[in-house]
Length: 316
Image (cartoon, rainbow, N blue to C red):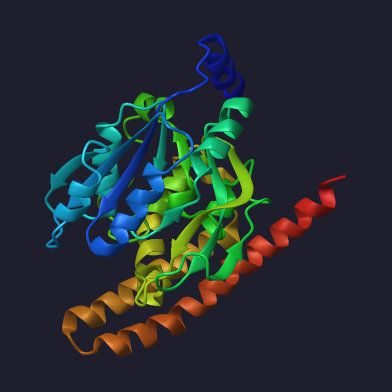
């Protein structure tokens, strides 16, 4: 499959294929301007920037005015980032699709370097290295994430723990148009990106640009960092993907990984019952979730560490 992709680029001489940049937006208009600006300033010029307003109450008129003629704008009722990205995918015209969150920033050569790798290797999808930062200065990194080892067959790694950040990912549009069911889950408020990577990784190897080309902002209350959200997301991934043993990928999922997700599913159900009864304040719910999430978190991390160690031993 990868060879076919590579040959297709060469046969048609596509030295400058169009890249569709999809930016979902709900909150943080000030950061949105910075994100869109980083997409506009890319050294690779054959792009279309698709901004999807997911029913935000904020005024984005200033951003639209500043970048008039440089972005395609869509407005929809609030449905979450997954539905916003899917709308962008359906309205994209590029041969490649890249995702950028509305509070994150790209380096100027991000598309150029990532597209160069994908056209040279025929990769179906790829990601880049990135830094995490707080506040208004993307250059003041709190952590640098090395993705050099996260490539190839990353299916099990995506289930356990993979350093894939949404604004680092670029995908060949062809594979999405050929598979209309390969989309972000619109049932999941959180974790829909993780499930999307799992589905992609089940079908295609991942390529990696180890260089830091993306700056990912850590907001004060980032949902992904909350234990309650992690329980919910993994419980839904269990229901949407792992529990279905009829899937062709099911036999690849080891017992420890399956157990970790089952534990999250049961813990989520228990917390949900308490929430429905209204017996716990939000802070208590988060504290309880941390306690319940600790065991499956350690189990999945440990399984990934042992797997990575075994892979290194097999590598000559």
